[in-house]
Image (cartoon, rainbow, N blue to C red; front, side, top):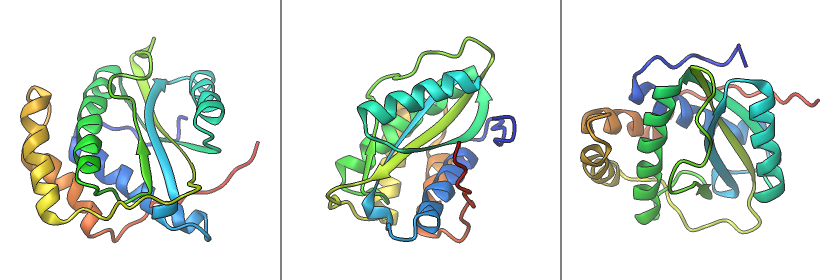
Length: 183
């Protein structure tokens, strides 16, 4: 957990990092395309025990068999990012525009607030049984979602920052390397 990157406050950077990780999944799973993958992004306390508990819950309830820590951040930033992420994903899903087969989310805060000052943002995923009809968002859709989300998140992030973060979907040139460790 300590090796996970520390997010310091730039929402666009966090969005880009998550997109680069997601786009690295087919390199890890050679037989899966993005359309064949269901993801969930959540938050947990910074302890290994807390994140393992969340992952075990996802394994049981969502049938997700893989998980990783995307980054660490302050408890306050985790709350802000969660609010932005939920609205961005809802906006993209409403327009049938995700870069993955499915993105599950709770429509409120799903995870408890961290008991410490630091939180972990994690992702779990699994292959989809039936791929969904989502398509990669266009620039126009990215602009629509950014315009819709920015005013709804109480000044947490500006429209241009959302556009900047989501623009990584259109021109993914970097992928985060993901290594499979089994325990």
